[in-house]
Image (cartoon, one colour):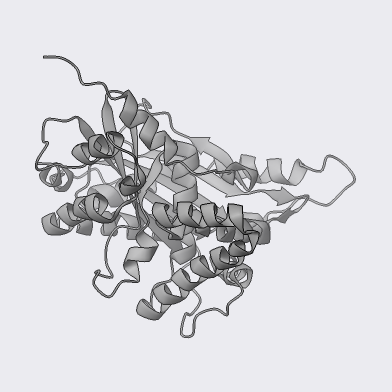
Length: 357
């Protein structure tokens, strides 16, 4: 049996990648390799860059807002606006309005949702650190009256190691790393235990995703790889990604300002934060196992900021609209509980396997 040529699929997914410079605003303080030993999950620690002794939270908020053109708008609309702007630069005014309107409509439909800035962050992080293209613009779909409020925060994909890897994203804003990990694990469990929702996500990709912006035959090849019922023999793997943006109290542990190296403060925080790598991985592992997940099929990105509420407010300031009415500050404990990993074997890890069969 001949091996199908997947080079057009690889090129097509690469074409869907958008410009990403999130590493200009975030530092990676720790990252597990794909072949790292242990139970998992692969865990990454990211934090905001510094301007001498000050975390650049406003700069991150501005960058995230600028990325909303790519995150919030479907690929075809992006291309159409770009083409129009080449002929008439004044169209760029409509570009910002289109992204802004998507967020306003989203908040009107989902007044209790507080993770919108985390969802944009998740898009940027997975694009850059995993090199995985956004397959569907979920923001636009969540504003539709015909779409359910609940669902994944993102679907990305990359062809690697002989298979299409599909990344299902859950984004969380939290007051603590442990609280965010717990929320992520519960959301992942709810998704994986709901067969109809699982299949609906694949249907959304096929019918409403960014693949329709591809040319033939690449478009059909990509659609075939997302047709899990009609094309079951094609190689796929699924990974469940948690992007947890949380308030980290270690930002309060500051060095004295001197006329020495300007990056001393950032390096000091990076070293302090890196020391939490094992603790944060263990916390995620505990919650994933408690919720019946397979940790080796999961990845967790912890993004430490001084205050998630300040980031969210700065994001809306960059957008040029007031914080949505009724959207209160996130509360809850600021402390992370000890990350002792549950050693009981009573948790049956069947949710992921059932979802993939």
